[in-house]
Every structure is written in structure tokens, then in C-alpha cells.
Length: 135
Picture 1 (cartoon, one colour):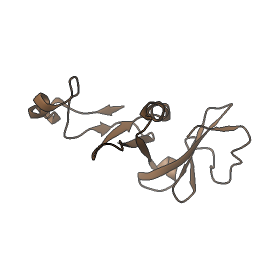
Picture 2 (cartoon, rainbow, N blue to C red):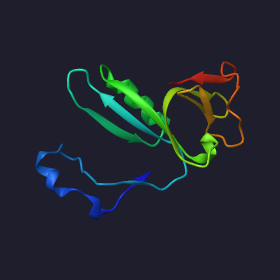
Picture 3 (cartoon, rainbow, N blue to C red):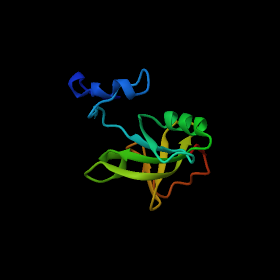
């Protein structure tokens, strides 16, 4: 889901980097879909790591794997999801998945509700009926 070009690669970091990891100066996101900016911070080190995840399933997998690391997740949502004319990046507080349809409702800081189904108004949904809290 994320893309870049070879000319954006930073090759001078290869000797000090993590084996198998490549570094770029920029990436793109070619689809008009929500994605996630995940900050991992280990308590025993002074630095953290940022991961761009393209799905909630990836975020949940990271959360399960992180153990003692703190995890801050920002929802990066396109206009059709957040109801504005611009992309937004907001702290994700909760995520609920509909048991039947699989649609997801995101609750971000400020208690705003967004649905990944453009035909569904998320605010005011009774999330305890037919929804499961997954984050």
C-alpha cells in the first residue's frame, strides 16, 4: 500500500542499519483508504520507532507483539471517512468492528466517530449491539 522510488533510498546508512531493512527519504500512499501511524516506545531506551501500517489488523498484531513497549496509534483518515475536505491524523482511542458486515468504527480523540463505510453515519451508533471492540 505504501510506495516509493529507488532514487529515494538512502544507501549510506546500510553499514549501520538493521540487516534487511532499507531506508527511504519519502514514501507515498496511492490509495484513498485510512492508514495508521504507530509509535512504539520502549521504556528501557530513549528512542522510539514509527511504523506506518496499512490496516487495523496490522496494528492489532503490533499491539500483541509489543509487550512492554507503549504504543500510540494515530488514524490517518481521508475526507470521506472524517467528513472534512482534508486528510486528518488523530489519536485513535477505540476501534469497533461490526460482527456481520466487518465494517469498522473508529473513535478518535475528542470522541469523534468515523466509519470506514461511507454510507454509514458513525456518530451515535449503539456500538454494543452487533459490534465488537477490537482496539
